[in-house]
Image (cartoon, rainbow, N blue to C red; front, side, top):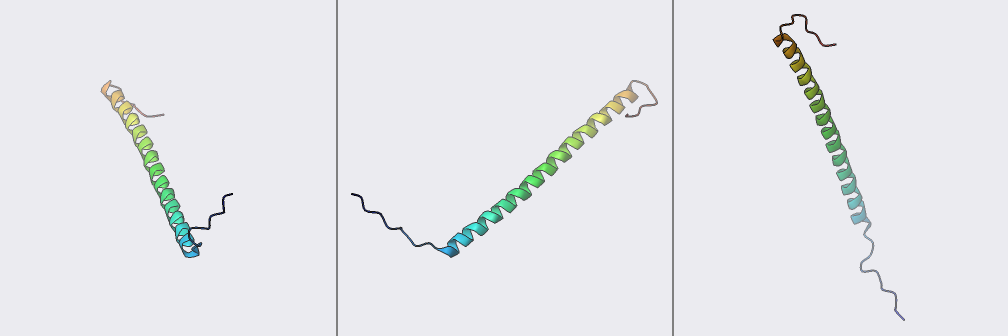
Amino acid sequence: MVSPTPLSRPVDRRRDREDEEEYRARMRMNFVAAIVILGLLTFGIWLADEMVAAQKVQGCYASGFHSCSLI
């Protein structure tokens, strides 16, 4: 018969609290990083759209038209 093994060390509540605080800090930083990445992605999409619109207007003017506007 196998005898039950005792716990290797007693529960340290202070260490558990520090681990929980570290976990929360990591989660906050992950959230901030996600917001920054989302902002950069949104800015990049907006910038690409503006560049395409400007290219269309320049192409219209290059074709010789004088009333080029985006709809």
